[in-house]
View 1 (cartoon, rainbow, N blue to C red):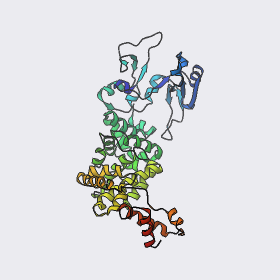
View 2 (cartoon, rainbow, N blue to C red; view 1 turned 180 degrees about the horizontal axis):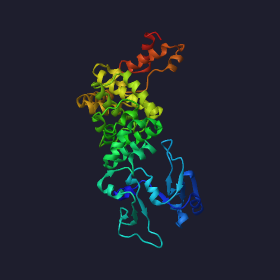
View 3 (tube, rainbow, N blue to C red; view 1 turned 90 degrees about the horizontal axis):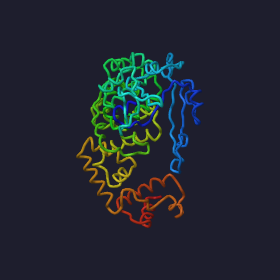
View 4 (cartoon, rainbow, N blue to C red; view 1 turned 135 degrees about the horizontal axis):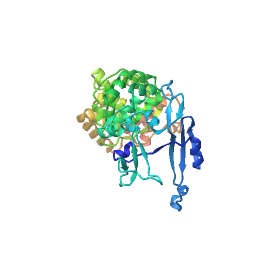
Length: 421
């Protein structure tokens, strides 16, 4: 509803109705209860259900969340109401988080047609129905204001995650948060620590992987929500590295899009707190451990953030002094590209220099990461007994290969023997 009024294509539709869950299950063939106690039923509809035929329609279907109008009881767990009472549209609107999320469309029915007043159409001008607004959401939508429904302190007490949702919506929609709602969020910021870490992590993922990430993080910090979200200190820090990621696709990692923007934000915070351009490895490991717990990061996500930060530090502090083999090893690491994105944003001159070096190294006839000429299996085949010494010798032989000092297996074996394998 909100997106349609803003001229954007809605990503999904939720249906609210005075029909009870039992009645919804009677009307539709394919239903699934996902929150019967709260009046929520998933309805799946196939084309044949409304008379469509043809091979092209056979596997098409849509699943819609259908919720019964309700009024909520107390929220003693600060997440879900202890009880609900099926009610009317006005009561249902009054329980929602923000006014722009509490608007309804009454679609044209068989016996009625929408009037021109508050009529909303789709992108092609087809009438969708009449807007029903009990909470002033239309005025806020036109003014680009995000405002809590009713008492903002009460809305936050019901679910403190709404503070993060306010940040995400305001950033994505380019809305200002209403002063009374903003004051309430700041006043209750510390209470975010009581929210499930998994839910906090989900909200931060949505912020950081969206093009409006920098605006979201600036707003998050200005509302003093960054400390509770990251389980660390509050820092109203500039975010130049995070801002630099706008306007181009993010390099994907095995953890998806999160690794690079989260690493950028942590670097921005480190600089604001310490005044140093690059963190030391101990800081990286300690910080990533804390943030992993705070945001419930997956193993892949936390590895990606840690690796990107370590690569940034290695490039910035050591690249100019590294030999050929170590430069190639560093440049061949899986997350070297996102690390270089941050290095180049921070120090364009260094970024250009390293990029030039990497280009030369990759075209030297050997490459950055060629298959090793010599393996442990080769040594065993030569009659050597496996031992811890294998690893050291094989690494030295591979360094020689990267530097072009050995170019075939015979030379590699000869070097291994000389190293005392």
